[in-house]
Length: 124
Figure 1 (tube, helix red, strand yellow):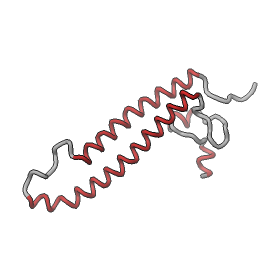
Figure 2: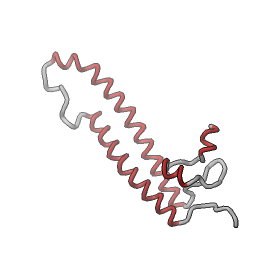
Figure 3: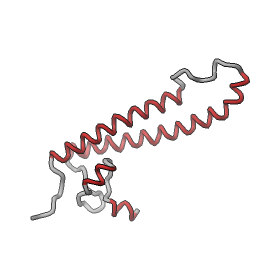
Figure 4: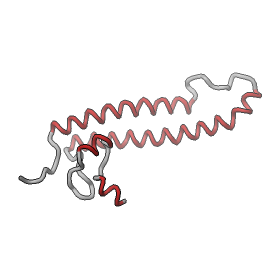
């Protein structure tokens, strides 16, 4: 029997469901980070005493920078998940981009946007 060259439609559907769940959570997390950067929650010190504002200004700036970096990472993760959905539609999902062989299901369940087998990932 020859080696499988792609996952079946049923298997791709299973991965699609995993990715959609992760995508939904990632989008919620991104929205939370974005709102904390933009202070849309209204829990800022901007309307309190100027003394508190001076003391908190440095911490606030640092916190916004960290949140900005986290938001960027989260957006990159969202893009990777969306790209994985495109690969599912093209039926190229789960194929290592270096070797052309199938990435093991266990790896894809843990890292559903993976494009490299673990062996190839460790080589990089």
